[in-house]
Image (cartoon, rainbow, N blue to C red):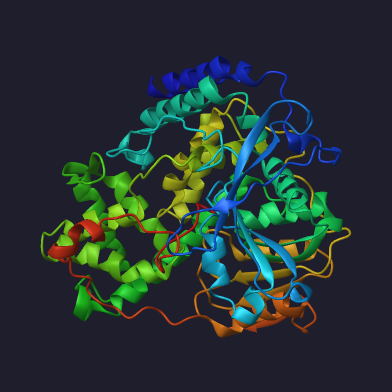
Length: 540
């Protein structure tokens, strides 16, 4: 009976909200739209940022629908750190995007320029922006602001929570459609790429440079496909494959996250004298699931975040270790404290730092608007249930967490054309510099290889054994110096074949027990800023 109700609920939700986008065509369906768009203007003023006094901010008006450029307008928040080199040494603007989809890029100009030698950084205008519908752009999309409040239903299908998640996901899609049906079909990667060209034109330049990580690699390659003659230099870091569907990309993520979880467990087992969780990988993983089972019966207070930390919140606290292994000591401490000291404080602190819902910045609506709209997702819960069970059989750490995170696509009121995402050929582009780690869980290695093959003349730099998601700016000289050389004068690695250059990975973090400090509890529980070494950017 529960299965029948679920299927009826899914069908009803689609029918109820499906008409909201009737007659609307996303920009991705017409990639050859004209560039004859009125040039927006940027009125720069100080961002009043005490940490970066030179940073300037502006709002840029862009068309809502690029198929109707004279129609309704929305605004994009843009900032810049201006070049300070002599005018004859300047190399123009470099636009920056961290991924998401939907993450803010406003933190990037000050941060990334500070990671590059001053003689190079000073030659560029560093440009950050908030993707349309998110953060400080206007309007700012919000859907079901309490969607992530704990305690949410258990992710594990075997716990009988599928109906609750289907209803929750359908309600989220319906809530988005109720208020934002006029905007959501126009938040695709193509729309955002056209916004980038609006920024270029407002800056008054013929060519831009670009750095993008994670989904930002899809954004950059899409821009290059639409506007190849306007690209001067382009760097793509931790790469989404150019043709894979988002549904299939998520399955690749599940399998790679399992490998990273196994690596975390093996690292923890080697430090049994510190964490006391067992001396082999299997023993540590059993302890992880033991904590999760305990939280089903006795969830932990999440304060200052709302609600409780149950199994779903627990899984969300841990999956980020697949993006950034600097989290491993705190993750191991969470398990050790809970099991050997009956101390939930490290779990509470880790949840608030890594996974607790923060301000509704529009990132999750943007994530769905991109992923759900650019491909035809399966709509049949029976298909999802059977297919994801196969994935869970080989990748149980992340499979159902990732499935429910993306389940709104089952009910999303608009899905793209069967052709899917814009085809990337690289025609007319200058050589693009690609960076990819072999153990990246969020954007698996296959994506970097596929992008290299799609972009003639590109150079692929591989970090063999590396696992950071977005591998630049972690202090690896081999990687960072390659990036700097390209920005300095366009120099590229000279290697031929699939891999132009190979760099070594960073060392694993030292195992330490992260003791809670009562005097700094409030600070310890604060969500991480984007520039923190333990931060991750977006879901992919």
